[in-house]
Amino acid sequence: MTEPTAAATRFPPGGFRPDPGRGHLGRMLLTQARTELMLTLRHGENLLLTMLIPLALLIGLSTLDVIEMAEPRVDNIAPRILALAVMSTAFTGQAIALGFDRRYGVLKRLAATALPRWTLVCGRVLATFGVVGVQLVVLGGVALLLGWSPNLAGLGYLVLFLVLGTLVFGALGVLLGGSLRAEIVLALANTVWFAMLLAGGVVVPLDTLPDGLAAVVSWLPSAAFAEGMVSATLSGSGVGWQPIAVLVGWGAAAGALAIRTTRLT
Image (tube, rainbow, N blue to C red; front, side):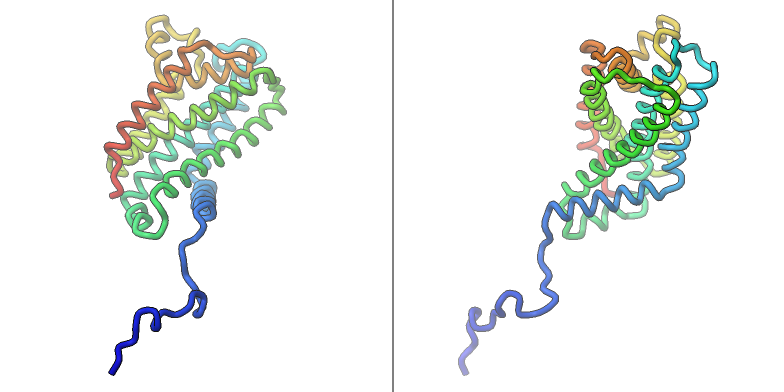
């Protein structure tokens, strides 16, 4: 009896339905990013941290004389609150989400699917930028209603700092969430968020801090980010090399450490 050859037993492509195959990479990336974005926006705790608290601080600090601030107050407060919102999303929210995704085995299971690993990473990055875009629309719209009048000449610097700040604090969030236990990440990420808010040069301007403390805080990424945002929207210009150098330095260090220490489980 003659054995059938491989060519004779091969069925023509499309002969059966369904006809599974590898999906389009761009479509896979957009689907992953949309899923991450929806999960973030539907999470109540994330909304509290990334939207409601910054919104309450924006309205409260713009209308109440709680912190010493040059007039008009909203022109100084609005860019600082935008910086805080970006840090909440890219750092705190990302660290906590990554920590619990590792704990529940979500990343391990996703890595075993047909999704390339780079789509998992890029999907999270795109989702983070999506949330930042929503924050910019909502918080920026409320600030404009409160009388915020940003200098349009600084629009390019504003976009630069928004992108740079999102990437730097995203790298710090991955560094924290990708290497520690979820419970530790939850406690540490919230503690760092409060520290940045109260003494990290975000809401309280550097020139109102004691000289020694201000000199130290100016080298933190939170202060560099906030001061860059204020300068871009208030004067329409950059603030020199220091804030950009500080952000790039922290981002490079955090990214390099995150690559070495991030674990799927």
